Image (cartoon, rainbow, N blue to C red; front, side, top):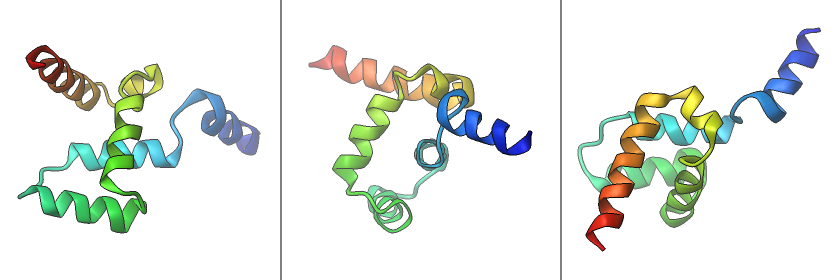
Length: 86
């Protein structure tokens, strides 16, 4: 039963490990932009550009909102403010 539950959670019910890791990076406080990009490259194995592409798509995923509403809502506000300025 546990294996079945884990398969359902990983496939449909919740976020995968990579999506959770993206949100975890955004929850942290960073001393400067270079430190964050270094962690993205070393820990996640992603270029900063790809990281932000995945993160932006993740902000529209209802599972992300359910997983970490504070972070997702904060990032949505930042994104909306940037779009308004354009």
